[in-house]
Length: 86
Picture 1 (cartoon, helix red, strand yellow):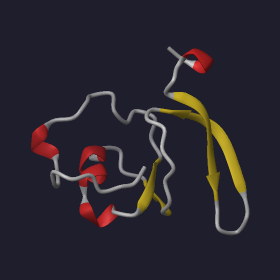
Picture 2 (cartoon, helix red, strand yellow; picture 1 turned 90 degrees about the vertical axis):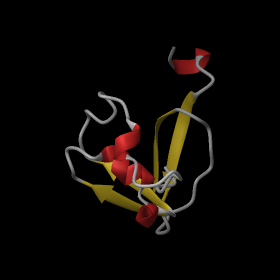
Picture 3 (cartoon, helix red, strand yellow; picture 1 turned 120 degrees about the vertical axis):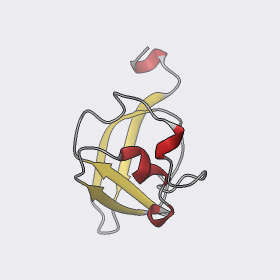
């Protein structure tokens, strides 16, 4: 499913503190999230990034398109709680 027929897609907005606004296509669960935008250039280890408590309160941008292709496993969790906000 995608587009208007998918209840989990729609417009996403990234509004920065300096007033700039970026619009794009959202996917996944709908939520309003506030946090510091950070980036990570690692080619692997995304599961650890998302569960690392040091990313709490941050919105993580990853720079590789392959994220999620191989799924997740319990051995790679940094903690049982999520770290990043989005």
